[in-house]
Image 1: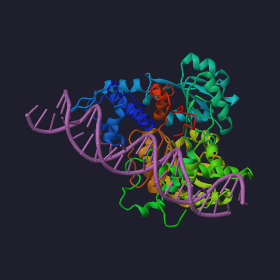
Image 2 (image 1 turned 30 degrees about the horizontal axis):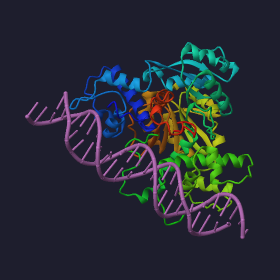
Image 3 (image 1 turned 180 degrees about the vertical axis):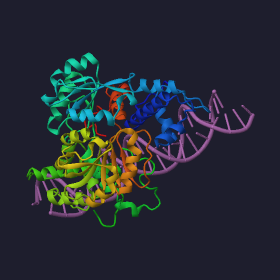
Length: 231
Length: 231
DNA sequence: TAGATTGTTAATCGATTAACAATC
DNA sequence: TAGATTGTTAATCGATTAACAATC
């Protein structure tokens, strides 16, 4: 990155950069020593190598022409850019069963993250623990969040609890939330960064595209999903 | 839609159209009779009204200038465009706990979808039921999927089972999958439409943006998240 | 050096926004 | 009719791809 040409990285780049962070973390973890070049990252992750270099230009790291990037250096630079610590803490909100099941679907440590607080909207869940972490009421959010220094949360409550949950998390100091509960209405605390992920909408979109009605119109274009149908 | 100007709807439009489908479905369900205009949809869903009209131009429906769209007509046209039936069936794959918890996070019927088959990779789960549906082995996928006419699936297995799961689903006739398990590698059966959703990457991206380092560079631009920070 | 790969500029592509005539 | 809203065209914006000089 040249010092003068500081510019905002597009959302899409930030998302890809976070994938590179996961990927390089995995390489380091597995003791990989092969050359780490933009085209290797690109091939592995299904993006173009120009995109990788363009994305990395937002990050304070330098590659070596002819050689590529140093694993650790790149990892640290990405972590720094993304404001991530080692085993970056996050909170999760949802019913106990879901939270329990989640940890096998998404083994946080593998990705350099760490669940440090669980909240539920169901009083029956309070006090029970998941992986040694007590499930608590959102009433405790402010205390827990500030004590553990949590800035981001995964939210998967029932739909009716979403607005309240987001407000309480934000009030407690959580600045960013990934919302897995589908809600149509996007209102949320001003200043809070919320990523809305809508399972039903994504499923519906899949129903639409898997028999692509428009396929007959673009016979020359490459097939829709071969180069990574990511969202 | 004019008949001659058939063109492929962009991915982003399809995703928004599926949100309109959810939204209009909810309006119908709640007996709403207020005018249904592009600007109303736009305001409610946090998109621009031009985008709504542009999106709807891909769909075989006509609005009435000065009046807007007929609820039912629009709903049916959207369902038709998206290839959706009423209570569109989908399968879900994951551990039992997660699947159980999922149904409160994502009440499918509310969104015009219906879980008709559950699969687990854990033999302990086989035979137990969730909401009256037996959890089965993926060995039964072909039979179940073809019998129930399932075309799409929600996949949330542990990471190591993902490639096998996708292959078996595809072999069983499932053409589209939403993958909630984070995987870096995007390889999947050719011809299968897979949407990769990566919880850890999205969380990391949130860590990056909630203290937006680049904010100081674009003082004139509107704040990043006020008009719907959707992904 | 020769080969490989970076970082960046220019060209392309696609999607969003603005604007407005058509029309209920 | 007058007011409101559609459908679409043109203008803008942003992101991706291509290309290549710089450089290890």
